[in-house]
Image (cartoon, rainbow, N blue to C red; front, side, top):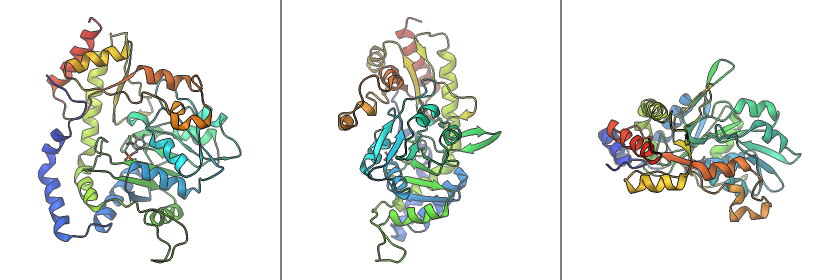
Length: 370
Ligand SMILES: Cc1ncc(COP(=O)(O)O)c(C=O)c1O
């Protein structure tokens, strides 16, 4: 039985009428740029993230770019992050003219190590970008304590709606840092029907500046105080996302249920390590990523049975050819390098059927002779 890594058509089938009627209303209005639909989604995402402000933009990549610009990161500055993430996290640091500084991950969660980030701090450090990898929040509060005074951009592209207990209170992805950034790439838990992104913050001044930066505008139309971008969230995407948002919590809960089912089924397979979620965290499982012995052979064997998997990420960013100028070598971030050799993401999407889950489990267990 084929089991794709992700089946967006299965999800669309469950919400088709709601989405199409919302789209029809927008198309009839012919009001495609910003306006009410984007403002509505901004209010909804701010409420979900417990933030005062939300600013829609064209993608999760642009959300990072705009956040870095709003913090004045540029030439001569250093921005600390991990190399075990999607390229956008570091590509945007480079693209604002700053220098990415890579620190290694915690091997249990794949997220940034606050002590490593603090050790990399210099007088040039402009910001730190912890990534909530695979849907589990990074230890934002520990990063803040370890690096007092350094602005934090939480790359929450994979973690909208995730939460973490901090001092006994649930804090949402994007709530605690200086700026949080989301992606609505179709494969995210809240995915659009195309690209989209959003930036959240508690800081009014940053929100105002972000709104200007996203449409190369000044305080007054056609007068420009600084050079910005054209990076608006498409109103068509905003209506799709507002139609999908009420389902997000249920979808993420279904992913957690699937994850728990896999965890139990793989508990006696010593050749693989199932995802470790910190007790303080509630993950949204954008990915269910195991570490596996003979990972490449396992992937090939699953593929032969029609089971989709992916390797997020096969080459850590400090070893990418485009960052050779930074001077990192193999061994610079050993845990990121080991993770790149061992990880494999399995299908986890909410619409997986019981039979599909059991197919994946049977194939993985069978590969290891269980
Ligand atoms: C960790 C991370 N950062 C940034 C991005 C960039 O988002 P987008 O693809 O919307 O530009 C993504 C997702 O694609 C991501 O997973």
